[in-house]
Image (cartoon, rainbow, N blue to C red; front, side, top):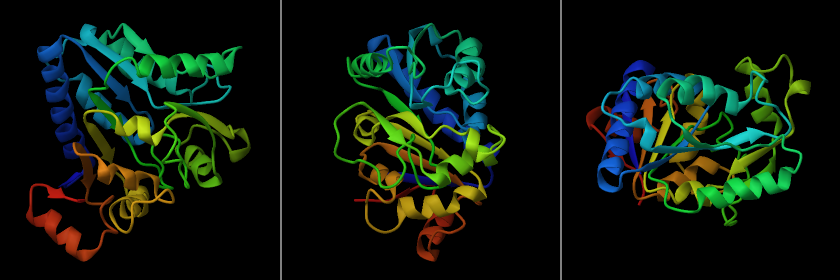
Length: 261
């Protein structure tokens, strides 16, 4: 995995968007289609805004999936990831081919199986992910299931994850945050040809440290990204602030640093 460090979140977002746009254009040029996984969460907003501003992308040839969704929340709820992606990406780009997790469907289990079938019909060209304050990727809270081959899982959300949602302003208090979600599994995320992980903000510094230092382990779900042959982690000064001195020095001296193997 490559790690890149930038001075602030705005520069980070632009650099990540440049790389993402180049990947999308390349996929379309090579096979007239690009399959992407979209992340939500406030830490992704600046990156997504920069990405949709990029020129030279034929969004009609992009097929989009998303990482996760709360169980039982309708698309009208402000915290619905479907609502966020519709408003911030789908309607602004004109993407017509998108597959949402209908986690409030009457036949919930069938809906989850169907989106899992759809995402596995072909390779994913690029997955955009964030890292949660507790180290999760998608809604795979620690300890994450690194073994299952199921493309999507129904997971229980831990207290730290639920408090993050309150802190970001999506819910008034923790009692309103759902206790379960549908999440793309770690193994399914790792099947993407490329992963772009956008992680700004001081509140993510501990999670970044867990991701990059120590063993690759379910207790630090994002650490699995280190095993991907074509993943890039985009950091800025605040999110990288708790990294050990050696790694920080390398990041300050080099354009990008390889972490693992």
